[in-house]
Amino acid sequence: MANTPQSKKRARQSERRNDINKARRSRIRTFIRKVEEAIASGNADAAKLALQAAEPEMARGVTKGVLHKNTVSRKISRLSARVKALSN
Image 1 (cartoon, rainbow, N blue to C red):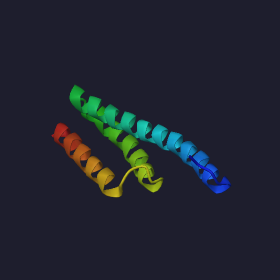
Image 2 (image 1 turned 90 degrees about the horizontal axis):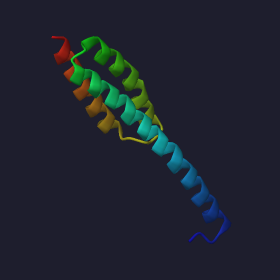
Image 3 (image 1 turned 120 degrees about the horizontal axis):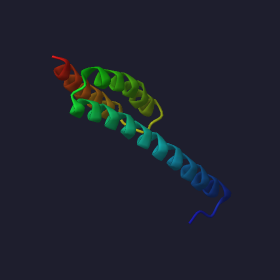
Image 4 (image 1 turned 60 degrees about the horizontal axis):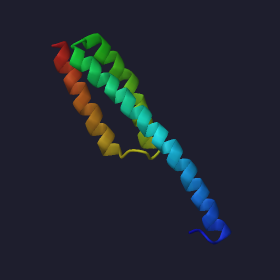
């Protein structure tokens, strides 16, 4: 349990950041799910648009420290490969 004023403040900040990060992570997962659904439906145009919407959101997750850079890079690469294969 936090005892000092500083540790109490850090606990409050941590709780607040945790909620913000959780919301951002959820939002990123939603964008990824939309791309997955578009790929599954076989609609190349919808998949491409969904990927274009998801990429900046995922990149923002990196800059905000929610996700690791390499993780996002790998996910974007795999999704874009699947979208590209769909259009061929």
